[in-house]
Amino acid sequence: MAATTPPSMTVGDLPERRGSRYPPPFDKPCLARSNRNLGDPFGLKDFGVHLLTLEPGGWSSQRHWHTHEDELVYVIEGTPTLVTDEGETALAPGSVAGFPAGTGNGHHIVNNSGAVARLIVVGSRKKEDDCYYSDIDMQLLQHAAGGVFAHKNGEPY
Image (tube, rainbow, N blue to C red; front, side, top):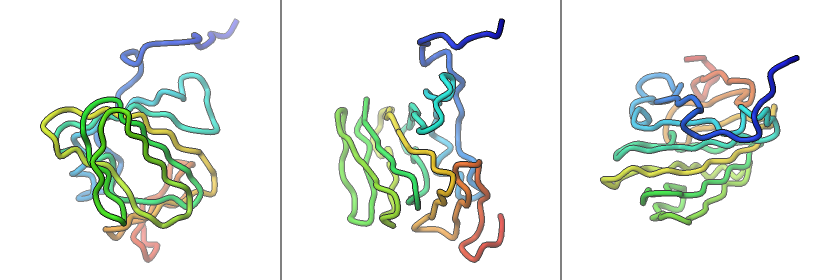
């Protein structure tokens, strides 16, 4: 008989991934972040759910937007700052931010406070999704399939 996934588990039992897959030097602002995938252990395929922890000074990502992926962020702990094309917005526990696919509005969350910030991040998983980075020469093609980081002219990193 095959092993089955328990109906629930604790976050501490899930693997933690630190940093990012970005090529240098774009990975540096994200070294002070950790991520636990909450949905994959249950076989969720249509959307991703992550617990994101940002140490003081950490970034959630480079500022980016997706062609086909909606994203939602919910702040559990801390006072990070949301950065979008409109500027900066202070967040606090209970804050929610959403980013519809295809808008071209680059966003990320930066923890400029002196305390840890924890967020739940939810995103759809569309196979046709590509990701574009607003402030740097980088794009992520075929995001849902693991992706290939490339310069904006298409040359791979």
